Image 1 (cartoon, rainbow, N blue to C red):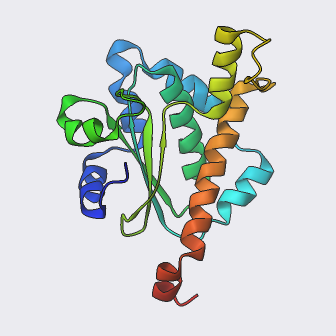
Image 2: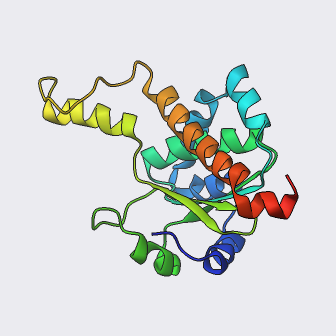
Length: 191
């Protein structure tokens, strides 16, 4: 569910940057996976060029858990994109009861899943929500669970970690294009 701008702005104000979020997991040893994934996900030159061209301000809020492996992978990928895109501001919220007002209405397939990420315009107007695992992760899981003969299962990626980075980057690019082509924002910025 896409929430309203005022609500998302309030949640964004309570969220923390990547390094502070990763540090929240240190007491339980959860920071290691986040740091490891971050090291594996450096952007290549083409990806850096793409993200460096993002001209619209974008706010990104990720509801996640320090204990979650898929969260560490997506969170590190998002951080790499945000570092390369000066107009992207990324924040993280730990999934706790304190944020039940965000968690409960944003169930995925009837469950409380993480990560769930909201992409917003500069004024916190919601643009997109991305939740749970990426397609490449589900393909890998389906191959293991359903077997290679299952007709609905595409081949898993050769490099699953880099595939997730690509999928995350695709969503950032898609949202950036939505914002760049938005009549509302084009009028505001005179472009």
